Structures are given as structure tokens and as C-alpha cells.
Length: 348
Image (cartoon, rainbow, N blue to C red; front, side, top):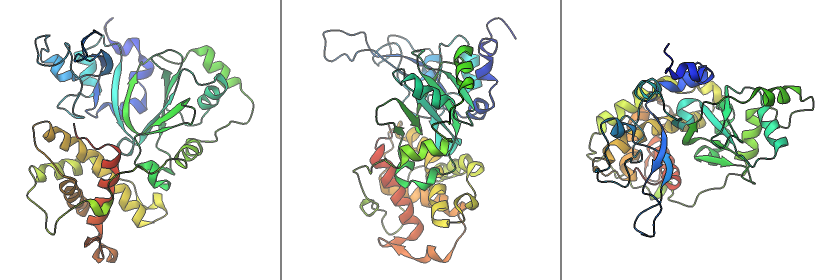
């Protein structure tokens, strides 16, 4: 360990088991200033803090590059732009932060982001939640980031499952499900920890499942395309890089798929969770190829998801039924794609 080793500066972060489970995912970068300085020119966007294309930076990003500012934003959620945490730490040991794109269904974790303007009493109750795996101060120094396990009742709220963020009605806190989280690596001060531990009243939130249910039950349907609007054609079309996309999605998701027992052996719910996990990994591959100019329709994505699902979901009689003129599982794949695309339509 050297004086410049960030592991020595932030041992609570780098040594944390939950952070280590995320460390191998190639979805890490730093959050930096993107764009030009504010000017009177309306064609020049003002600077904003955003996750950067860290590989481009390390390859020698210069002010002469053909994009606004010396840095450009991360346009893909994989090795095209991003690194593992260990790679990031080795490459930029003095980084001011560590930004990670969280995919709750894939990672098995979520982030509870407590805002700076959250009333102290509410913030204290959130810090009292059982099962917090990692906690830190937010970038403002007034809020908190809490890493929590994926709630056991996560799939009990189908609308909430497709959301990227579940926000408390006042905006005091939110659950990040499919979203960037910028870690400061600054631990919660001992004085605050002592105050939380000294609380003797009945906790406002019994568990992360309790908190999630309170937010998830109010999640509203997004207006967007329906499953029947996803045209999958009669036979699978010729989709560029289809085999590698399916194989890589399977390789990434297979070891993280949940067991039917987690859903009281409700196979329809379990199958939809499998499709969701596969889609999370597949979307990373699709973004990478889309960045190269390849275009994928919602029907293409549904077919790719269906092909991957056939490899991990055992056949059962219901699969012989047809919905919207196509095999049951293909229609379920189309339904999931329709839901996700309505919420986050761009692969860019």
C-alpha cells in the first residue's frame, strides 16, 4: 500500500463486501464536467456534471476532439466507455469520486439516495433501516447514499419493476433501480452514527421491503407502446450480431437468475423476472452495437430476448399457447420490451 493508494484513503468503500460485489461489473467511471463553459451562445450547452467516457479519457482525450469540452459523456454502459472498479482505481487513483451504473435486477442491490433537503427526522429513520450494506455522505455532504439488498418483494409490484427510480412524493429520498450513482466514498460521520444508534423509538420503516412497498404501490403506468404494438414477425429476422448478443446476455445473467421458490413457485412471475434480468444484460450489448451504427427495432430485441429465454426457462405446457398471434414466451418477451422501451426508449 502506497501513500497514493485510494484503498488507504477510503477503506470503508474499497473493503466493503457490497461494493466488492459490484466491482467486477464493467460499469464504473468518474463523474466530471461535460460540455462548454456557460456563454451567450445558445448553441453551446453549459457544463454539467455527468459520468464520462473514461476509456476515451485514458486513450488521450484532447480539447481538439470533435465533441463539446475536453471530456465526453459515457454513451454506452459497458467496456466501450467504462471500466471495472479495480481498473478505474488503478488508472485514476486520485479520482474525486467513483460513478457506477446500477442495474438492480442484475446486481441484486439498490441504492437509497437520501437528498440534502430531507428532514433530519426522516433521514434518521432511513439510516435506521436494517440491512444497510454500505453508507456514505452524498456529494453535497448533507445527504446519504445507502446500498441495500434487492427487496424480497421486488417483483410483487410489476409497474415498479420497470422503473429506473422510485421517488418519495416530496422528493426527500428515492430508490435507484436502473440509474447512475456517484459514490463519494466519504463515510457517514461518527456523530451521526451515534445519534442513529441512540434512537429508541419504533423505527418508521421495518425493512427495505416495507420502504419499497410504500414507494412501489404508487408507481404509475407509463404511457408508451403495448406488447401488441411490438411487431415480431412470424419468423425471427436476420438480426446483426444476434448470436453474440444472446450468448453474452446468457453468460452475464445466468449466475444471477433467481429461483422459482423466491416467487412461491409462481412460474409466470419467475419467468418475467428471468426476462428482466436477461434484458438488463442484453441492453448493454445492444447499446454497444448501436454506438457503431447498428439499428435494432423493438421486434428485434423481443426476438433476441426470447431466444435467450429459451436457453434458461424450462418448457411447460403454457408455452404452447399463443398470445397476440405468437408463442407465449415470445409475447412475454415483447411485453417486457414494450414496458422497458416506454420508460427508457433510447439505446444511445
